[in-house]
Amino acid sequence: MPAIGVAYLGPVGTYTHQAAHQKFGPSAKYVGQDTIKDVFNSLSPTIPFGVVPQENTIFGSVIETYDQLRHSNVGKGLFVVGEVTLGVQHCLLARKGIPLSEIKDVLSHEQALGQCQGFLSKHLPSARQMKMPSTAAAAEAIATSEEYATSAAICSKICTTVFPELDVLEESIQAMNGIDTDSSGLGNRALIRIQHSDGARTSDLLLPLSVIDLGVSRIDRRPSLCGNPFEDMFFIEVFQRSEGSKWGDEVSDAMQRVMKAGWKACLLGIWHC
Image (cartoon, rainbow, N blue to C red; front, side, top):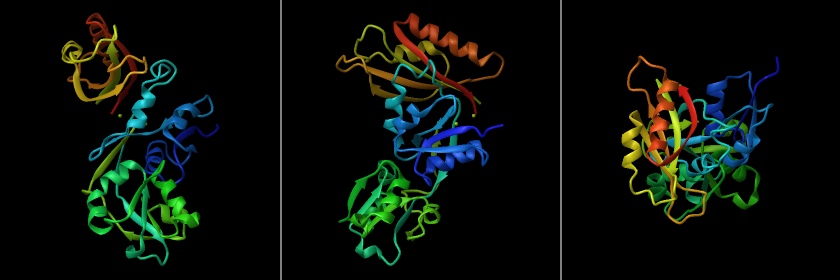
């Protein structure tokens, strides 16, 4: 039987790669992608699963992921089927022989940069912070490009095994220990996308929340793709408050109530934690 294909936000060594491996194990065939958008676009019969970062406990939602969840194919041919929680420890890596005092730039994904602002402000206040597509891409850049010979990367310690040219300058530089990152790969949960059916401004969000009548664990908001100014769409993650009925039926009934209240609703995924 061929190995199952799993796309993830690459390159090798990203936290998303680790989360994918935690979910699907060593027998899967992992296919790294350059961007979150590429992960979504790569899904196919040969690569039926993708793993992307959704949120973390300090810096919040990953906007790139929610921007992709806005598209109409999500909730039709593409669904959220699970989640993975990964403990994250950020390290500061640089080329061997480069001390902390010589670091001119710090490269990483914007989430990691945000999580490490305390360390950067104290120890590298003059260093330029540069956003990269992923933490592992930052490690690759400082390892292979002379442009970044005196730069550092915030990434996982595992990147030193991928790029032996690098050393760890500091470990666990995030604002607090125990950062958890949700990567969306299970209680009963569902993700519903809603927006007002007539394009009105969405100041009355309490109405669909009141009629949904399920436990609500999180709400995220992004501008809609319809072109109407100030029209938003909302991503509502709900959970089953108690056992006793079919979770799928509960979600379906909740969506019907939302639509009767004048909102469009689309089920993006349903899964078990």
